Length: 271
Length: 89
Image (cartoon, rainbow over the protein chains, first blue to last red):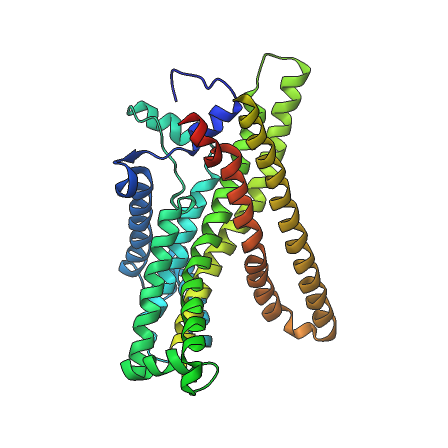
């Protein structure tokens, strides 16, 4: 953001809320979101690949021990709920947990740091938290919906799945087919929507509170009482909110993972 | 003209206060009830505390979800009000 200083606080915040986008309307690509999510996805893959490459059956090193803790944690979660072959679901849950956690953790970077670095390359907008973009969260939750439907077909068969769509939960009477179907469709659609909106809302609101706190420090006008106290207030409140946000970041990644596992497990249960 | 803009802005501000306030009431009462049940259960059966604590954090995230979605929408209206867009298009 070298060069133009924002004229007032609303402009500061609006500037920080703009994505680096290419195209318009339906075909807008948020280049910054795509770049950050791919970069952090590669970081996730690298993390596990490097641990697997150097893994020893003897006394584990610190990195291997850490990765083993994470893998075992996720595997316990999957084992408790899902009773079919979990060789696909457990790595999926692990990927979701670590990837969403890394993407959320980008929120802890200082607010103007990515913008300053981006301005060295001539880029004027760079939003660094991919999960604060509804596109990312909806992409992930729609993928989860597809996986859930796939597992429904796999566990119950095409005929069984159709039968259940029309006869659960009220009963098999033909008069109840429409209420059953409507209820099942609502249930099926509400899962990805709530999954996406929960993560998006948490991250977007968190980012916005960081921006509002940063505004306090942006009103520096020399060493007078007002400026010094605002700067002190910004440091204190920023620290408090960042510490609270560490909890929120981990919690939201954990919730996304657990709900993915639970929805998939529910899809494989027969009624 | 400014009158219409002022009207939209004032109603938006009132709406934002309601969204955040009512959402906070619901979320806080919900977490209060859940927390009190957790403390009761922890007092009755201390050996269950680790299991229950994990589930409790999961529920905190789920209960806070609707409130935070409301906050996100309210913030969106605060800084990029689409209702004003037709006047400043």
